[in-house]
Image 1 (cartoon, rainbow, N blue to C red):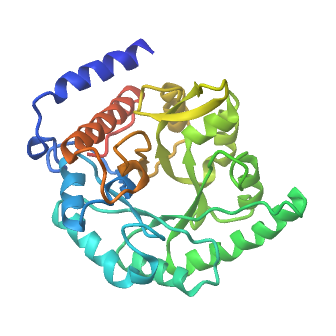
Image 2 (cartoon, rainbow, N blue to C red; image 1 turned 120 degrees about the vertical axis):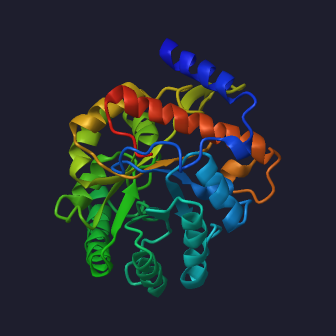
Length: 320
C-alpha cells in the first residue's frame, strides 16, 4: 500500500503545471509494443464532440478509445453505419485508434447487431463488449444457463461470420457473469477466437473476495479484452456498506497479484480503463459535467501512468 501512495504522490506532483496541450501524447509515449493497447472507456468523454474527444485521448497518452456504441452512447446503434466511421476517422487523424467498442448486443437475431458487427469489421475493430443477460427468477439456474448457452452459441456463429470477437463482462451483482463460474459453463464449448470474456478484476474482487484468482484461471482461455478500475467498501451513515469507485491504486484491487497472474496466464488483450469515480458527472456519461476538462484530463493521465507503472513492474511490455 505504501508503494501505491508513493506513486500517487509522485504522479500528483508531476502533474503540477502540466497543461492539456503539453501532456504526454500518443506520438511520444509508450512506443514499445502493441500487445496490450490501452484504451479509455469513452463514456466519460461523451460531453465532447468526436474531434475533441480524439484529441483528449491522444494527448492523455492512450492508444485508443473503447467507444460506446449503444443506447445513450457516443454512437447510437441506429447511426452506426455513418457515425462510427466518423469517430474512428477522428481518432486515427490524431494518431490513436479503436480496437474495441461497447454495445448492448444480446440478441443474435437483431438486424441492428449485424449492422454494428459489419461496420466495426469494415473499420478493422476486432473486439466488442456484449450487453448483459439476466436470470429469470421463474426458472431454475440450470434452466437459465441452458437458455443463455444457446444464445452464446448463436452469437459465436454471428461473430465468426464477421470475423470479430464478442466479450461478456463479468459484473458484480445477480446478472449472468456475477459469480464468474456461470460464464465458464456458457463458454466451455465455444471458440475463444469469436466469443469470450471481457475480464473485470474490480468486479471479480467484489464478488470473489480472495478466491477471484480461481475464476480468472478458469476463464483465461476466453479472456480477450480486460477492464481496469478500483474500489473500496465504505460504511454509510446508516451502518450499511456500499461500494465506492476510486482512482487506480487508491482502493482494494490487488494489482500486483492481478498482473502477476495476468502474465503467468499469457493473456494478451486490449485494456480499457474505466473512469467511474467522481468526474463531475462525466463518469455517468453526462453531456454537461460540472468538472472542467483540464481537471478531468489530469485524472485520466494519473490513472494511465499508474497502469503503465504496473506493466513495468510486472515485466509486461508497454504498448506505447
